[in-house]
Length: 342
Image (tube, rainbow, N blue to C red):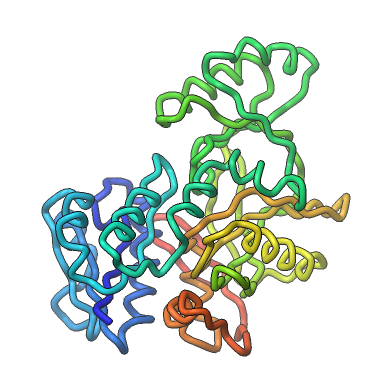
C-alpha cells in the first residue's frame, strides 16, 4: 500500500505556532506508527525546518516538500497513492473538501466519509442529529442579521455561551454576560467564518472531557476518557492540554454515550473524538461535539496503548477492532510553545 499522510497546518506552512505545534506532534506520531511499513508525508517548504528530514528519524517514511498550495497539489498528485490519512480542521469545510478530493480520485480515505465530516463540521447539524436520542446542551442557531431578536434574553441577566458553528480547540468560544458582549462576540465571529450564523448555548458547569474512539463505520470502540484542561481568559475559553486517560465516576457512562453518538452518524470511521461535559453536581453527561479526525489526545494515547494506534486506525477502516485494550499508566500533556508530557 502506497500511503500518504499529512497534517494540514504543516502541509500549508501555517504561521500559527499554537496550531502547528499540535499538528507537528500528531504528524510525528503517525510517522512513528507507520515507520514499519513506510509512508509518504507532505511538508510545506515553509515548515520543513521544523523536521529532521535528512537523518533517518522517520525510517521508511519519505518527505514530500511542496512549495505549491496544498489543494491544487492534491488534485494533481493524490491519485498516485493508494490510501491517505490526513489531519485537518473542520472550519471553513477544509477537512470536508480534502476528503472529497480523495473520494473523487478513488484514494482510500483512512478516516470518516465526506458526508459524515460535513454533518460533524456544522455543530448545529450534529446537535439536530443527536438531540432526540442523546444528552445535548440546548443550542440555538443565530443568524448575524437577527441579533436584535436576542436583546431580551440578556435583559434578564442570563449568561450564555457564544461559539462558532465550525470552530476547533475552543477558538471563538466566549461567555457573554450582556447584550453588548453578545454583539461584540458576534462581530468577532462574523470576521472569522464564511457561514451566516453561529451558536448560542446555555452555560453548564462541569468537567471538560473527550472520548477517543476507533470505529469501523458500524461498530465503535471507546479507547479512553480524557481530561481537557480548559480555562477562561477574559471571557474566552482556552485549551491548554489534558490527561490521558482520565478516571472519573462517570467514565463508563461517558464512554457508552460517546460510542452511541459515533454509531449514530453514518460514515464515521477510523479515529474519532467526542467532546463531553461531565456535570458532577447533577450526575449528567452532555455531548458537546464530534471531531471526525485525529485529536490532540492521540499524541498521548499512542504512547500508552498495548498496540500500534496508527495500525489500529487502518484496521478499523478495514472492519477490524482491537481484541483487547490496555493502557499502561497515564500522561498529562501541556500545550505551550511545544507540547510537553509528564
